[in-house]
Image (cartoon, rainbow over all chains, first blue to last red; front, side):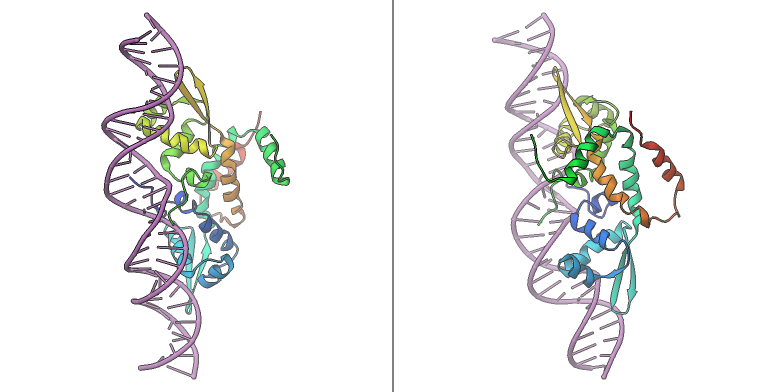
Length: 111
Length: 111
DNA sequence: TTGACATATTCCGATATAGGAATATATAGT
DNA sequence: ACTATATATTCCTATATCGGAATATGTCAA
């Protein structure tokens, strides 16, 4: 049995880094396919295919404007993801988070 | 080019439903492999393999106790996921369940 | 209609996958 | 040393994938 399809649910859809980038880019305002390809430096067919995946799971919406097709992130579809991960919040430890905070500020290594 | 490996990062690791179930089961307390297999009704080899994936990305920790091997969720590893999805919060619309929003704000506390 | 532009789809190939069975490894008790 | 228990690993196979090239579809404008 292979992996679940990328378009089977939100979890699988956002597993791909490029698709997350697309979602970030389309979060604030709608954009045409070509703009996404240019900005994120991806091939147009690749962008189109990623958009179909995101569309299938409801992470983006489409609108046609002449010959351009405008996509936009539907952030609400990310809420299940946020809620699922948030259900573990009660098990988060301050100690580790503090280490992480420091690590973010500095790119140093120690051991 | 195939999909990114399941053990390449947290996003890919949690894309599999079974692995999410395991994480939920191991969140509160450590459990032996056999217990996980029994409780979640999965084959033992399957569980072991899923645990290796989770271990690789830091989502679980291991401890040996005699002939048993105890695993436990390291919830901190889920924070990047939570933070990424949370970065879209400003685009959420108040159309759906407002109830869960409140529930989540209450969830985070430390001892 | 023809041509230019914008996007979607098809075809291709290499690769990681999930589960089950069989097997290997490790630990404990006698 | 032998046996039972617990877990990890190997072998197997069908399948979805991602990207790029080529192509199809769709839309506007003259």
